Every structure is written in C-alpha cells, then in structure tokens.
Length: 253
Ligand code: PEP
Image 1: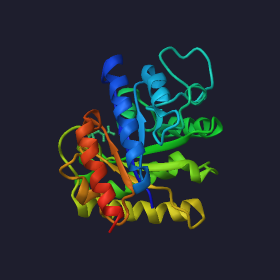
Image 2 (image 1 turned 60 degrees about the vertical axis):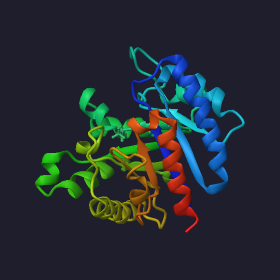
Image 3 (image 1 turned 45 degrees about the horizontal axis):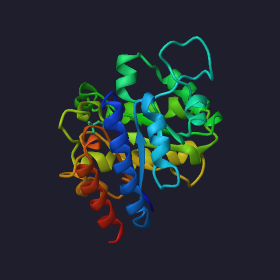
C-alpha cells in the first residue's frame, strides 16, 4: 500500500520560496513514485499556481488547506473547493484544529465543507484529534470517534476521504504521541470507520503532530498508520527527503 506524505505549509514562505520548494517537491515525488511513496503539498492558497505548475506532468499532488462550503459568494478572505479544483488542486484539508480553534469551525461546518469538496471532485483530508485535557480525562477515543461520525455522516464517496489523526497537543509543539497511543487510536478509527462506511473499505489513516526525520521511521512502521500529515518539517526539503527514505524502507520490508 502507498505511504502518503501530506505537507501542510500553513501560513509560511514568500512566493519565491514557495516556488523553489514546490520544484524540490516535484523532484522528490517523481523520485519516490516507483517506491509507492506519494506526496500531497497543501500550500497557502496564493501559491496554488506555483504548485500547479510544479505538479504538471509529475507525480506530485497538491491541495488546499481549507475551503468554504459555498461555491462562490460574499465570503471575504475565503476560498471554495470549486475554486481550488478549477486551479488544479485534487485535495483539500478539512477540520484542521487550527481552523477549528482560530476560525471557530464546528463539526457541522466541517461536514458541509466535505460535501462541497466532494461535489467539486476533491479528495478530503479530514483532521480529527483531542486536546490535552480530553486525553488526560480518558476521553480521547470518544472525542475522535464523535468527530468522525459528525463530519462523515452523509458521505457516499468514501474513496475520496483520507483521515489525519492529529492530537492537538502534539501539533507544532515538538511533543509526539507515543507509538502505542498512535497505534491504539488508529486501530480504533479503523474499527469505527469500517462500521461507519458499511463496507470493508477503510480510508487511509495518517498521523500528524510533530512528525520529523527523527521519529518518522517508528511512526510510519505502525500497522494502522498509512502515512503522515506534516507541518513544520514539511518546510525543509531535507527533512522530507529523510522521511521519504524511511517510508521507502518500510515499503520494501
Ligand atoms: C499540522 O499542522 O497538521 C501538523 C501536523 O503540524 P506539525 O507537524 O508542525 O506538528
């Protein structure tokens, strides 16, 4: 099975830096295609054209970091799934915890975003994850399965869903969930999604939260982990090259 490495560039890079990094990702994606390691870059919306240029005729894929549920309209500062698709994107992130926190996006809004993204023909990377207080209270699995149920309750295009488990306390903090906790949550999500999909198909399950070249080998080797969503380390091509090498090594075992 393919290892998916999704890069979330967040609100970083100048236009020139983004162009340069996009070109480096193109090389990496083409080099690793034969090893079943694939790359999805989610740049700031402004840099979509640079990613589109870099991904043309390449194995590189790109997507948005968020999208509004409407196709067009009076929504200052937003971008729609339809617009992303028309600019060449194939993917979009939904429900990232920074959007849930900074923009107050609810599970209902995330569900509407996913519907609109599917209508536009995009594959969604749905982020779920618990806060530290929830984990300490033993509520992590409950929070995550509730988020999955709420965001995916109307889904029919299961083949266009990817899940990223991102414990909020591990994002951008240098704190990583333990391999045991990651595997336990991924196994729980797989079980939950199997019953929610009503079929044997389970969407790919990514882990996200301070993944880097130093911890990727252990995380990517976990049985229910199919890849990673990477923030900070995704801005450094050498880190991504090292993570890709670990993913390749796991594939050839
Ligand atoms: C993210 O924001 O999706 C993420 C995982 O960030 P970081 O890798 O920096 O923790």
